[in-house]
Image (cartoon, rainbow, N blue to C red; front, side, top):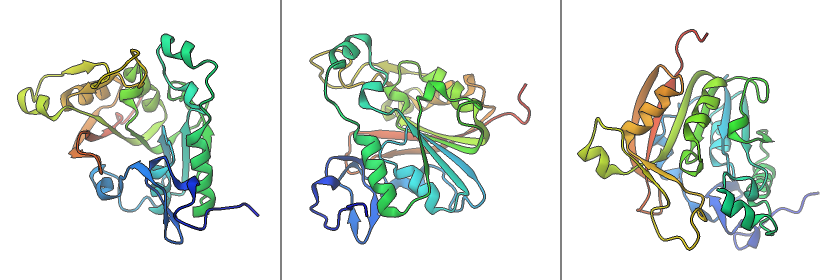
Length: 252
């Protein structure tokens, strides 16, 4: 028998990225709680019969949500360790000997067991996505990942390569730019707060909605539908934008 948490004060439920309902009234203590805004992403209420890929799953909130909505198959991917994130060389050198552990896979496994989930987890970098490495999926979900990547366009191209019907792409945006420059792609580089060492927070990009849409189109998607902008609770300093991206009818 696997020893699973039975009380809310179990330390194994602390320090998560996602707030996830785990069953028996237990909920992980997540930095972000997506439950109040999950309806803003453009995810259909029913995913019956669909094959879904969750890119950069973290603790697994969206993968488990896709499963809850009836998807026939859900695959979740992420890097195996924090050291495998898209760090700049200076930070990768600093972290080479650091004992960082693997909180995301550990949390995912725990949530998977507590929810009695059938989601398939695979360690995989977004840049390595292809029909040969993971297969093809009806729906591909990518939330809050692009800002942490050195090359978000390359990631979107990889996502496009495994998308049959459409992808749901969400990332942090600057709403002020949407108001001032609604038709102009604007992009800011670098972590928006203070850093002691450049790149230590592994956050590179904040963009306007126009930038995100244009980048999605450059990646090979033919249609883009904006789902609007919203705050990520419980914090009020992160504004996100979600878009549905559809490939062309035929891809050469």
